[in-house]
Length: 187
Image (cartoon, rainbow, N blue to C red; front, side):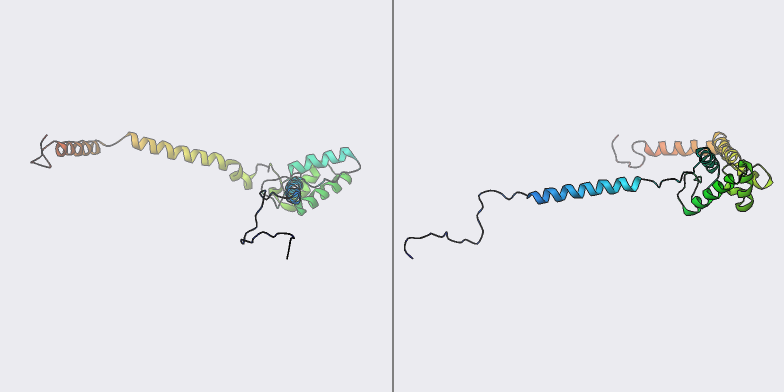
């Protein structure tokens, strides 16, 4: 082999002059993933576009009436707030009835006749809804009565219980005196 290129002796591990740095492709991939996550988060927060009627006054009436009617599917949401299919259908029914010339009261009566008093956020006070209107007051009174009785029972302790407690306290004091439990103990 003469004078030629001299090859280094192989030790089994490659020698590097500089530490390995991430390539530009890794940085670009990381930034792309972060951007996709941000876009996915923003898209999940976006709501559906509400259909607008040709008449803005009609749409305002529909929204006002939909705010007074409860969604039958969702818990404690109005038709205006809910995006459930049934809520959208009910809101469209409200829109069609208002277009037909019915008043807000007639639309509410139609919905109440069809779905019951549950569809209204403020059901009327009548015999079937007395418990609904008076229930919170009854629960508050019952809780107050139980608290009053519990505090009253603790306040009026019988004299016999007081005498027993005093006797037990005196016995404990005698037992804790030096020399009572351990006669050979020094005080």
